Length: 128
Image (cartoon, rainbow, N blue to C red; front, side, top):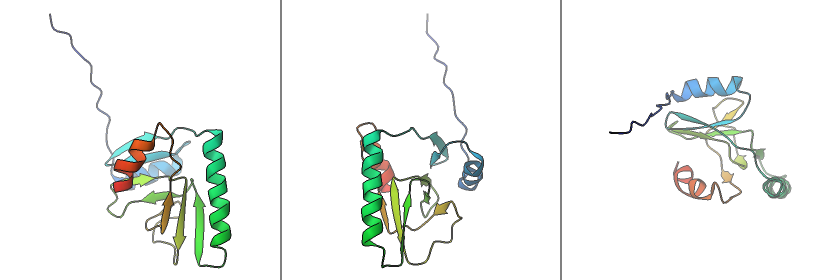
């Protein structure tokens, strides 16, 4: 007697469709090679570290042509294989050709690492 295992195949979507989906979504979702993943909430310490980093970078960059974005700014990879919401990002110079919701060429990306996301953040996400 053989056991059968049910496998669910999740549909994929093109990047442009993902961007339209994000405009209507009630939560943030990251995009990776056609797959959309809901983002989990953070912890108090994660939030405190992110807030401190945003404050420090904002002060250091106040006299430069740079903008500091918190985690609501989507970063789209140049090849549109992925879209991420890093904890913070910095864009110096002209704002990218993306939408009001997405930046495609950030100057700096900062992720606060946690045990549950560390490997992913430092491998696939970083590579993109």
